[in-house]
Amino acid sequence: MILLRRLLGDVLRRQRQRQGRTLREVSSSARVSLGYLSEVERGQKEASSELLSAICDALDVRMSELMREVSDELSLAELAESAAATAPVHAPVRPMLNSISVTSMTGVPVSTERVTIKAPAEAVDVVAA
Image 1: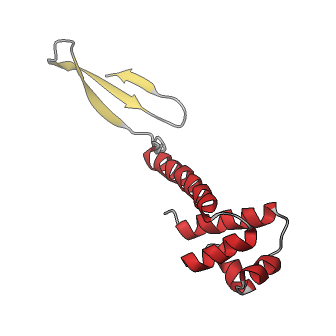
Image 2 (image 1 turned 180 degrees about the vertical axis):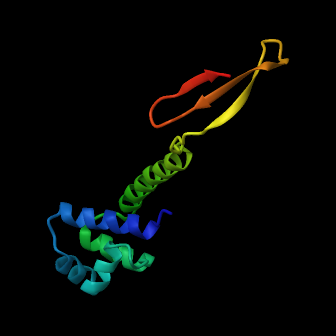
């Protein structure tokens, strides 16, 4: 599941780090507690629009730029999640010791022939019985 608050926090953290600023500097400028800003950056708290505005002002970043970057991250996360959901799951091949009936090209079962497929560890032996 994709959590918007985590993506938003990641983008906010990257913006702050690009500027070489500390959490303390940004929290002071945005007038939000250091602990709360840290929780927002880690995706543990949902930031209100007022708080986001204050953080964007403190980072001198337009909220639309922030949201655009979050939107891009969300698109990538959705694509990755979708690809993972549609990727074929490869089940381990288990050896089976079964017999099968052989059918002729006309679709009529051939009652006099029988093929046994044995699948030990690494090889497959076909034995006509």
